[in-house]
Length: 509
Image (cartoon, rainbow, N blue to C red; front, side):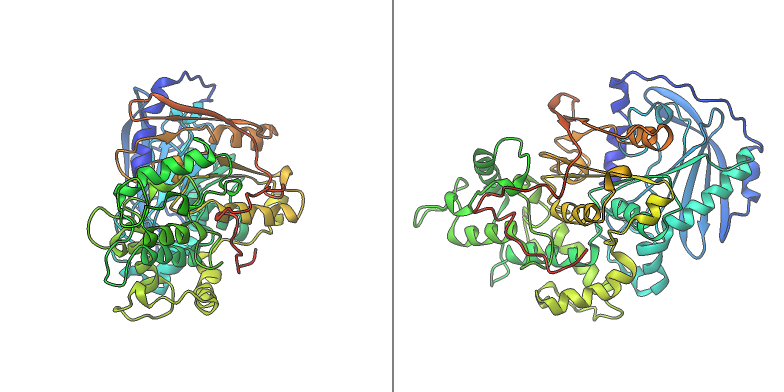
């Protein structure tokens, strides 16, 4: 998904005006000589002058590629001239496995320094190879070091390697460091703020998979709850448009907060003996109710109202078993290869027990390596760091309630407004991209988030209301929202019958 988003975002700047006052900063060494650079615990394999097209401009970069020991592939792109001194590190998505594209930072599409190629950009594959969008078998998880790189260390190590590369090229390191990621990248951002608080001055963390180990329980839950005793699918894609329309009728076309809606799937129940695309059978009513409610408090709620069109291919499939949708595949990968020190290769999702014991067992490695749930960001705050979190209210891949719960815990510690903001985007799907997780989404939200973060870090200008336009593939405006910072401690005034508000998460922040 991150790969698809970057391809689309590179076209957005053509709609926008831009200007920059970047200073000239000629490199201290030629690009080709960087192959002899010696970053810490890393080897540079190539250093090449390239040209990148951004906003109809041909922009020159020195592109450095290499490997951080033992197997983390990285890319650093350095402006040939006019570097602002700012460094932006890009997170990955899914189970990673490839170096994300670096043409533009995520949601930095109207940042002048990004559009004119004046930022140093870098990313890595987190220490293994594979296609994150198709969930190739995560057999790399058999290597404990690969797990640690993916879950904990890769972004911290890349930050130091990139510093060394910048110093070798320009003669000095960056004036400010920023991290920018969504989904797994959002989790990486929170992990950095929590465990490596001095690494970055500013962090963008979108739709963070911070509660990553228990997320496998949610993915298993929706896949198995859509599978009947014979292995067939209960709710098919033909039902999703009518279900989504019914939710919008009950909650509003652009749902501001799904917890305030009391939609009941039973309101769409078919008459006895009837089964049409406009109604739900009794089995489908039960399944949809389970989707919204989530797995018995073992994750922060279930599917948010308004996310229905995003269920297709996740756990509602066009053919075959829901267990083979994206949610089922990534959950099976997790349980087979990443969740425990050892697990039989024959492990099936039907073997998963939705119990507190399973939750606790998942969090043994989860808390040690994968999760980023610590609300104590005092060291990051003391370093002077600033963080912006954002999440779409209609996200079916990582339901937004996990971010709301986490940020509420951050707020309870006090002082959050001095260094953090959370933006909850009405009707926004995963990473504001979708509902289709494909190369051809029907919509994409394009708020500018990088520049407000830079302004906060470097000018002390705290972000307020942000504009969030959403476009279709032809760049026709679908909706244009102004979104204020979200207070996760504000009273919810939840609808009494809201399935989105009736969960009791057993975890702790």
